[in-house]
Image (cartoon, rainbow, N blue to C red; front, side, top):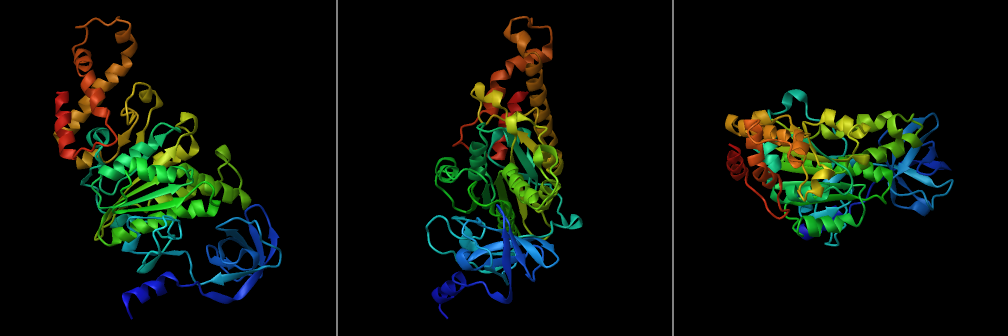
Amino acid sequence: MSLEILKNKLNSAKINLSGSFGVITKISANMLEVSALDAGIGDIVQIEGSGAGQLGMVTQIYEGGASVSPFGFVEGFKIGERVYASDIGMSIPVGEGLLGRVVDPFMRPKDGKGPIFSTERVPIMKAPIDAMKRGLIDEPFSVGVKAIDGLLTCGKGQKLGIFAGSGVGKSTLMGMIVKHCVAPIKVVALIGERGREVPEFIQKNLGGDLSGTVMVVATSDDSSLMRKYGAFCAMSVAEYFKNKGHDVLFIMDSVTRFAMAQREIGLALGEPPTSKGYPPSSLTLLPQLMERAGKEEGHGSITAFFTVLVEGDDMSDPIADQSRSILDGHIVLDRSLTDYGIYPPINILNSASRVMGDVTTPEHRANARKFKRYYSMLKENEVLIRIGAYQKGSDKELDMAIAKKAFMDDFIRQDATAGYAIADTVKILEQIN
């Protein structure tokens, strides 16, 4: 059999439907109730009739039937239409052919570049790496951004959050990390964002270069189920390349939209709302996704950056709070820094990397601590310095901080097109002495 015929067979493979089926008995805003359906929680089903070919997922089972959440929308469905269980399960096709492509959560191409050749299927939902099989994070992971590599150094296999309000510069920082990081494979998940942002992110933030990159897209106009499982599908793609021995960058925008999708699903299923209307399942879902990143013995690693949209710049938001407790570090973007023209606007005093001490040299850590101390002293005495109330010579350490102010501002500031090797960043940081 020729390679071309094999490709066509794999790409045109159809879902095998079982002989048993259920019948739609009730249709709500985003849920179908199906009687006599023999299926389990999480099973994939196919809806025939006016919604022919549309897939759904079993989200609730009760005596005599089940609730099915469609991956699309309920418009067009009718009472009495059949719903068949399928053999696809919660899995997606993966392979090297995904590199350089833009796909939806089912790995269907969205970039108009033709079919994708996939070599195997992997499950969407999977248990995180066993705690005792995780490798120690002892190697630095360079992202090419001075403020992060120098002051918030991350390690290979670490999970970090990027916390910011709307319009502060998350997408720009994401683009810098994807372009300049050392990982050979990058998986970018754009979950619940505006459709306009997808081509903008590719052209403006990545310069149109998707080499070594897989972009998984589920925009805000997709169903809540597509947005929820889009994140898990993207993580499964990253795990596929990790298991091949690669060091993978996984970057997702945003966790908040992902949690909002689960909020819609949970409330539709009758879960009680808690803080800001989030049901308990929204919070329990976060570690199921985030803990799948990391470093595994005998395999590669997944270094993950999750952006968190902080509504009203409120860091006590329940999703932000829960994310901080799960992740190994947080990078906070400060709107006030943009007023001074400092981009990326990373607030180094409110940010932290929990593994920096394990992946840096003592000299590097000492210089970073000195930088942060000087920066903190300037912030504490900013008003006194501006109104001229501080007399030079009163505090030798503050005098040194004032002398280093221009250097510190230049160190944090970085053009989006510029990237720095971590060795160069460490050398520049030595100027703090």
